[in-house]
Length: 308
Ligand code: NAD
Image (tube, rainbow, N blue to C red):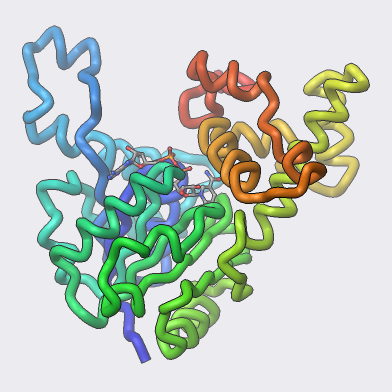
């Protein structure tokens, strides 16, 4: 039985930071690591700061902690629990991945990035440490394919839903080579320690919930375009009227992040062959256009709705 007392979350975006908060809520100390930002803020540029400055290197993860304390509804049960999370830059703390019981990656939904990250993790990984991905639907087998057999036994999907503090579902996705004892142990851990309702899913494109959920969102968008409905009309019908006051179609897309949703939908599109299914999972140009403009949802303050 795997005992998890410490963890490292890689990727401090919408999901990584909220997963770290959920772990902190149940008493697990964790590292929250991200990459060096690819640009400086105007203030930093003016002050002559470089990307190598420690504050800049830690900025993404440090900002994530600040957001955890101010987001409403709060991801943390108590603000004090934020002290259980140590933010930092992934490169600076990479060796510390050898010290934790569970490494969970929550980086951008891109198969090549996730594959490369797993291979890099293998260079410091110590046997016994569970390595999981929060991917919304990329194949766990494909992600772990470049890793050795010992690590592959410890790799699986642990798919949290947004927001992790409130969403009960946790999909656990074993890969072809995942040790069944580790799967059983993570199911128990998910239920007993994390307080989740666990569903074990097969390693199929977008697993279970996102195969259905993505389909539902895309069909709604297609119907909206065909029938000329407005964003407000669609949200009124698919939100409160269906007993979902906060999770209507466009509010959900803004919460998830349009960039992430496009990756998630594209993943099914790329991995199904039936004509009808491909047509259903085709990403609308409207979404691609919004992503190109940077209107990717709440994390940037502008999506279908503007955060004031
Ligand atoms: P996000 O864009 O909010 O955050 C991704 C973070 O990863 C960013 O901070 C980025 O700087 C960092 N990153 C990218 N490449 C990295 C690398 N090589 N090393 C370290 N950090 C890196 O994305 P998100 O919404 O948090 O999604 C993360 C994962 O969780 C994705 O796989 C996504 O499909 C999945 N997911 C998202 C949701 C959702 O509602 N947004 C729900 C469930 C699962």
